Image (cartoon, rainbow, N blue to C red; front, side):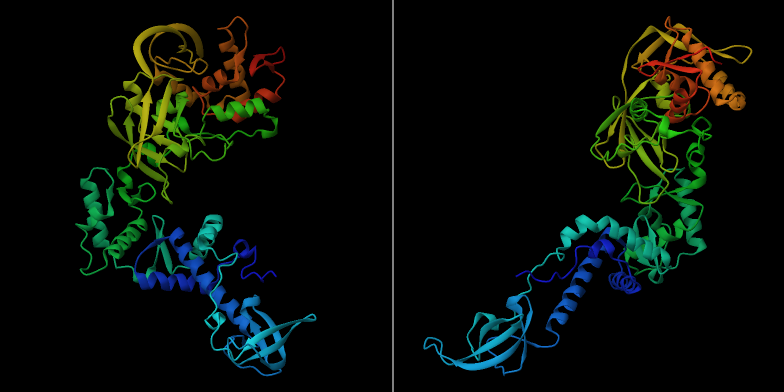
Length: 522
């Protein structure tokens, strides 16, 4: 016989957070005076729901009858509930004396269990294993560990949404706490915090360092004091929380690099309309390989990626940044909510450490400009990235070698402002991607094109690039990857709009393997 399930299969999927649930969690936080993460609150919530459902189910099963226990006496007409038969209900239809010299006198009950089923049960029997309170059997739907594994993330979102709908529980750095318990942090305290961070010269500091100078009332729970100051700093626009997940670090917004507060010129993209359905599987594969932070193609979970190598395009070289593509993103620390995260970049060869900034909201990492210069990088140079040994650290490594001269496509800007490509010998000391490599002797001159080229239609820009680049090859055609790198020397463009244009306009002829040439139609 199968027992009725205590919790239905869809119980945790369909569950909605009620006001009663919010009040329970609010009281839990109030009683413990310790800020908790959403995952910790979900664990508390699930265990409480299980307790409540167990109790409700027990009460429901025991309603309308006496729980059968062998030591008790019963009469004809009594309604019984039999725990050993999965809490089945029945009615006593007869009582007679039992005969068994080994156990002494007792009664035998005839119980009608419905649907024509009858069973015999002993009563008035002092010595029987079932006289003890029946143990609660673990049933499907009541395993807290399995529930958290399967439904934990969805429940976190539901609880956080319920908290945000009100204002009694507030969050900072991924932890929640009742607003009513916050210690008062006034303007004077915040001014002292600003002064401390000012003296740090833009170096982020943990809350514990600020509390040494921001004297909050004595005798306050240290965790409560820290959370209260964190919340007050979060609400003040002068301060920016820039720590990776699990760590709270504060910085003055005005002391952050300009390229962190605002998107650098060379990374600014003016969206180009295109039909993504035009992209072929071959084009989509190239898009995924290019590690462009503006790409729309997500490659699934990249949590297991330990390292990656990418080729720089000119915008990132010029801005001193790295793209946070779908593949690269998992190598860098993230945060619960901070749009900007301070990290430590480590030179894989020299072990020198320098500050970096993960600008999550715009998909790039800033702080590599001087490192690029020190390694004589050019557009197309390869950067190897891997996770650091310490939390908050990321290793960047240049694949360098003794400088030699090699033939490389070189960008030349004429006196008329036009850009041409020439194969010239250039000093090379870092490995590069052949298709994406461009030597740019004067970045300042090229930068002028960024201001002058905005009005040129995208179609004409691409055609002009193919025309110039095709002069360097006897076949007269250009690979889409080469073209992508070249176009980005004068305008920030992700791969997809470029590939869609190549695949949809008659003036661009595909000659195979993503090579294109200009056709007679112009």
